[in-house]
Image 1: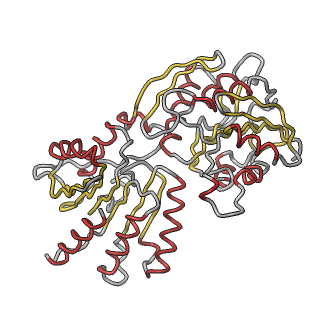
Image 2 (image 1 turned 180 degrees about the vertical axis):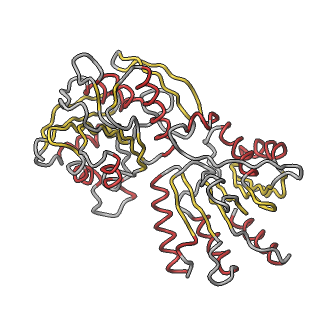
Image 3 (image 1 turned 30 degrees about the vertical axis):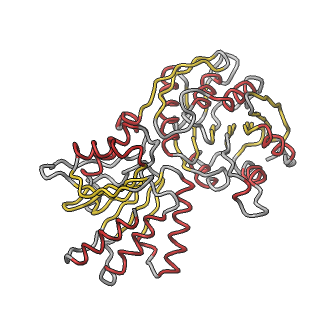
Length: 420
């Protein structure tokens, strides 16, 4: 892909065309493509040209953090002004509404398109990307060979194919607006009505019973959890049924890594039971995947409405956060500065072999909880069985273990904070 991009840039220079001013790296991962684009184009721009921008976006907050780090590091090493590159946690083709930003159209969109994004999402990408281009703008896309026929057919319908480079495992497509295409498109921005605005993300409507409590969810492409609650949720729910939750039903509730929303939806219905607090405080959902967070938010809102659950505060707010520690400031702000009465977490641990020696992910979770959890509050956390055993051994003073449940290779643990 970078070879095709470099050739396109050389051809523009030879033809006397201006370099692309607005560049979007859609699905940026670690930011390699966007950083390379900034490094290649920046020297071609006049000094102090404030119009050039590369926007990197990925659904994963960890990818955003890595991209931002790499952009800053490479800017210092290669003389690229750091203001030339932005990193965002957002869906493919997101951006400011065109009505709010005059330069919201793109001269070039670069993407290593995620093959598992879902067919409706991929179809929309081809259609929408051309509608977000400036006149003469181009999309350069690399796709796995198995999807080459699919993209070739979609581009033939929605756009003008300018070039196709075939490799053994991947194809690179360069396309632009069709000659007769006039319509523009709007970006795919996150928000409380995400599913209503972008129904092509919907994968299935699911009704299931967790601990004999029925819930209904809309699952979407690009979010973890698929169409069933899974062992981690089942273990957490089974343990939660045994717990005595804080009497303050108005305290904020945090669910970290909620997947499609199975657990927060179940917990809210469970807490509404006759022998439980009649209401709960603001509901906050945090995690790495912005698509999963939007699915969980949609499902929480729908279940709250359907089950007439009283929420004392914001019904469901979303905080992109790699973990509870890195997201601590934003999580406290989302709760209005109040400590959480309950935190339920399904941490996604990185392989220890991929981390520098001495990094303690489990200990970092314990460090993150006290600033967030109220005295007397409950911390419910679920891991694989082996990680749970190691986590429990690290329990610090100020927490009392309330119980443990194993289910399908997962183990849920519950603790009460006994000190402020």
